[in-house]
Amino acid sequence: MTTIAANLETVRKRIAAACLAAGRAPGDVRLLAVSKTFGPDAVAEAHAAGQTAFGENYIQEAVEKMATLSHLPLEWHCIGPIQSNKTRLVAQHFAWAHTVDRLKIAQRLSEQRPPELPPLQVCIQVNVDGGPTKSGVVPAEALALARDVAALPRLRLRGLMCIPEPAPNFVAACDVFMRAKAIFDQINSSGLALDTLSMGMTADLEAAIDAGSTLVRVGTAIFGGRSYAAAT
Ligand SMILES: *Cc1c(COP(=O)(O)O)cnc(C)c1O
Image 1 (cartoon, rainbow, N blue to C red):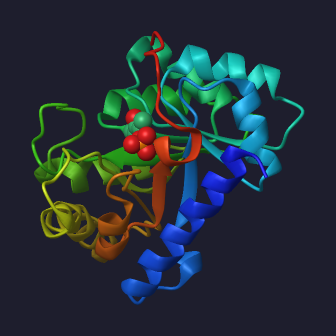
Image 2: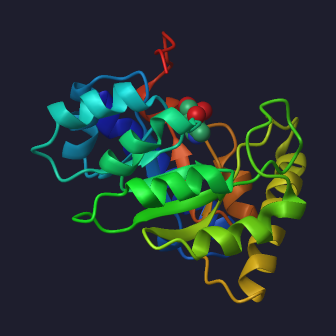
Image 3: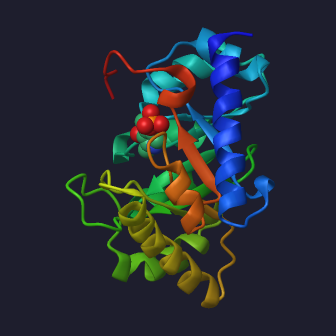
């Protein structure tokens, strides 16, 4: 077994254990393998070990990887910041975008989604802790943005995503993730049917699952430490 295959197995076990501890079914949580900064070989290796969904932050880097790997049935998720000048590439190449945080970006993605592709699956990024990354809509505006995004013809609103600052311990991490879950529940009780809560990474996936995550985005625990920062 390769290192990546062994790492994937370890991560799947962590997810299953966290689901068990939270009284949730193991199938409730999807694993997104975050392959940013790693080459096509690493992605192909993970695919050979049964992984099909991959997350990328840097649009240009991702598009090149997709071209190299176009023979494989992979599902690509954009999890990096989306500037206006990058919306076309995202609309043309990705199955999912997790980081929609303003209506203007959502409108461009909808307009630019090629007609021959299924709707782009999107999550709204929420800034749950006011952290210095500053990406994401503030919680008070999440419902209004969700309503507007859900009305766009070429997008399918699936849920919410958040990237809180690292918390000092499990309880503190759960606390922050619970804020995202509360917004998720509030939006669903208003009539929108969201099914995806994208939260949890290598360091905090157990806390995220405890709070209700349905999709964890894991890079380091699968591919190892990242040794360089790719250009956006
Ligand atoms: C890099 C990244 C991840 C993966 O982080 P790890 O700590 O390596 O698991 C998840 N989500 C986003 C948005 C990222 O940028």
